[in-house]
Amino acid sequence: MAEVPTAAISRLVTYLRILEELETRDISRTSSTDLAERAGVSAFQVRKDLAYFGRFGTRGMGYTVPILKRELMRVLGLNQTWNVVIVGVGRLGQAIANYPGASDYQFQYVGLFDVSPELVGRQVRDLTVRHIGELRDFVRENKVDMGFLAVPPERAQDAAQAMVTAGVRGILNFAPVVIGPRPPEGRAESNAQQEIGDDWRGVIVENVDFLAGMKRLAFYTLNPHLKDSPVPEDT
Amino acid sequence: MAEVPTAAISRLVTYLRILEELETRDISRTSSTDLAERAGVSAFQVRKDLAYFGRFGTRGMGYTVPILKRELMRVLGLNQTWNVVIVGVGRLGQAIANYPGASDYQFQYVGLFDVSPELVGRQVRDLTVRHIGELRDFVRENKVDMGFLAVPPERAQDAAQAMVTAGVRGILNFAPVVIGPRPPEGRAESNAQQEIGDDWRGVIVENVDFLAGMKRLAFYTLNPHLKDSPVPEDT
Image 1: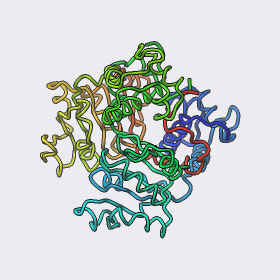
Image 2 (image 1 turned 90 degrees about the vertical axis):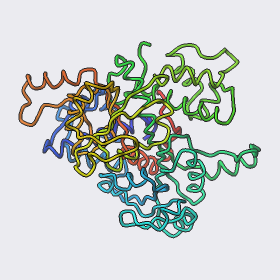
Image 3 (image 1 turned 135 degrees about the vertical axis):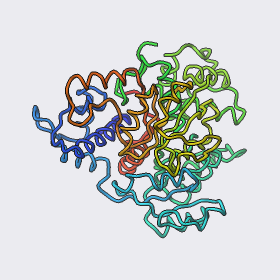
Image 4 (image 1 turned 180 degrees about the horizontal axis):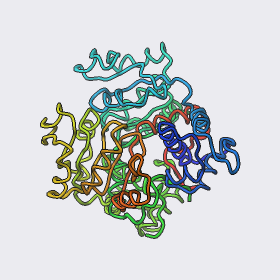
């Protein structure tokens, strides 16, 4: 795996979703052409994306759905358990905690954190909401693989910093703001920058941004001729 | 605007987000290098993305933040009002209805729809939840620009079909399944296909998929060396 474009990973996720749907419908064989049509990309794109990770089909024979599905799950790391904390347990955090399907991929919620006195101590699913101040000890004492950030936008950066300081190495950011290493206000000096950057070294941030989706939809509603495919394709 | 890659639109959305943040912090000038750094792409990429839509800066002088922001909002269609219906008003639909920021871009919720007797008739924000059976008349009598789909995955396709039949032309799909034109079970004949495909002609579907974000995060947590940029870049 040398250079894999980010968009290829997004497409793998889409192919996996399609394979799961085919499996539900008891369809056991597919092809790059079939996958391509369902994903709205070219068959060449499908073959290229899969080729980053190995040879999965037989030339001219296509793919066996359950095998390709299993292989994509392995490539994506979905054949293992992921322990997840949720930071922010308002409506959105609770919607995430209850979102169907997460547990199918062994994303296991092990801790819920908030600052609101109304929420801390409350039971959500089978977990008691803890105060964010306990996050550091919690991460130290438990295996935490990733954190979902679902606080209001104006608190996202501080909460993200608290997560990183606590040792969370992967963040799924649901807030519509850019989070990342940043020198505190009025301390843009090199030293502070260095320290803060170090904290974030190797931290992975992925974004799930409702507003971004709304904006893309606005753009394509105005410019439907520019929309040829439901999935981004390499150019 | 000839060929604009889908990823470029996603990046425009990110640039806009950055410009808004700069404006909040009273920073009035930026450059392609600065934007690029904050977005995690190359300055060349920034210039190329903007060039699809016009000339926004002065060579060597960079960009004026409020002007570039206004131009990107215009390009994305965010300088106008969008009337939105939400289909599915459980935890997720309610989280969306209350998601901060949507109203900043004049996404206005004009109707909420569900099938659950527990929800229909209930007040969410300033709207009364209606039964999905009323959607068609509602769309006919009101200007509805787009619909947000927030039902459980197993109901997403049927709900999407109901939206399209009712005349909704843009769908933001929050369910982790592929929605689209599809012949009903056992009627894969060409006639049915034709009719159903026609319904969906020109319908724009964008996806906001929590699970896709979780899967990308799992992949990059396992393969951090493949993650060089928080935003997809053209290859």
